[in-house]
Amino acid sequence: MKKNRSLLFLVILFAAFAGCKKDNNEKITPTGLIYTYFPVNVGHTVIYDVSLITKDEFSGIEDTALYQIMEVVDSIFTDIQGRPTERLERYKRATTLDPWIINDVWTSNLTSTRVEKKEENVTFVKMVFPITGTVSWNGNLYNTLDPQIYEYDQLNQPDLVNGQNFDSTLVVIQANDDNFIETKYEIEEYATGVGMIYKEQTFIKKDNSQPPIVGVISQRIYKQTIVSWNN
Image (cartoon, rainbow, N blue to C red; front, side):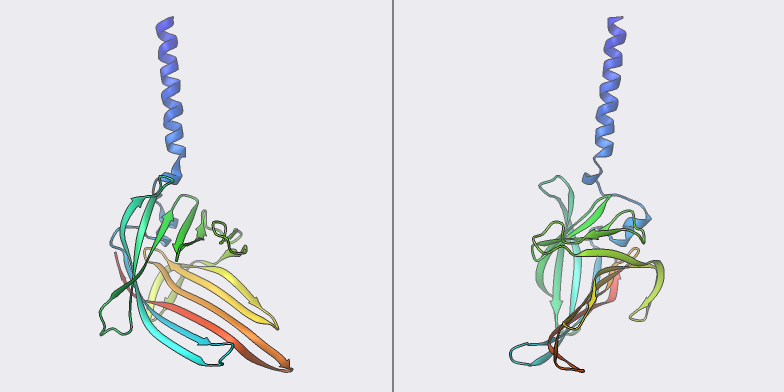
């Protein structure tokens, strides 16, 4: 009888331990079609064309900058929470004739419930899982910025971006406000197996001092469009 009780105890203990390991899915890289919207394999590389149009509020000077960004999943390490973490090396060049020069290093985490990306030491929640048209979340949950509600749009739809066809894409709307004072519009579009294929950030401060004429006091319009990628 003692032997049977001891054996039963060991079986229960092993089952409990195995269950704990299985449920601790924040520390493993999840697999499945929905997670391919954010590839994390080492060597994954995406090149983007970038345009940045600005108007300074004080000087009134307008400026346009054109350049390219290359983002590479350089390696994977374990963060202080014990999670696999991607080291993202970001390179910049003015034209296709110029050499790539490393610009900064970001990190990202793909878990079973969300995607976190640390950009310039600020962590954003880029996606949450499962992906549905009814879910919304605070993209600034893990930083000190004001709450900003993200939501999905155009789920699993084909799209043509920069002359390239993508079978399955989705859009994350990060901000979409337009009023008499300002315009704030932020989106990121992702494709399965590729990652982010388009990004836009539009911030316009308006001048309504002479209605009905509406002028622009200041603006920042940033667009990042995929050129090529490889795995």
